[in-house]
Image 1 (cartoon, rainbow, N blue to C red):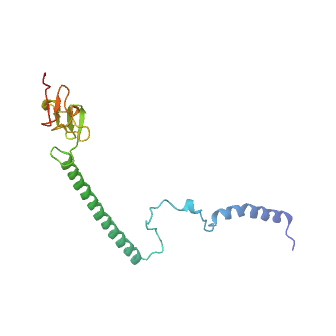
Image 2 (tube, rainbow, N blue to C red; image 1 turned 45 degrees about the vertical axis):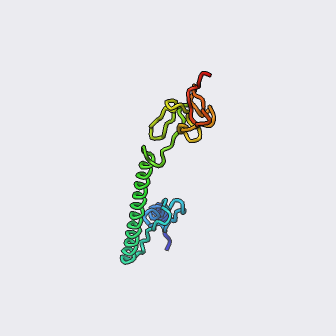
Length: 164
């Protein structure tokens, strides 16, 4: 039996029109994305999600994460406590009377320490010692004395010059 030509063309047109429609309704196969697009940034050592985990495996992973979290919190607490202790030590060392208070010469006759205290060395006739930042307390040469004073090398003191 011969199919009339018109019927054949009609069924061929229906097939041509139906194939794209069928392609849209049929679920495509699994599309694999490249690794760079499929993954997100993860922290080093961070656990990854596995949909095949059983509830027991997931509970065990959660427990491990909780333990790790507690350990990190303990370490953070120790670090903060260490930081506070070091700050207290630094404050104690740099306050007046502290062990880390240092002096420097603000001028040839003025000694100033890091706590803000200062001493006028010329009031006692001495100059400021550049190495220590403190006022000289004795002398061997006149350059250890304040301007206008001379060193009495026998007594090792800075004195007003005598008019001999």
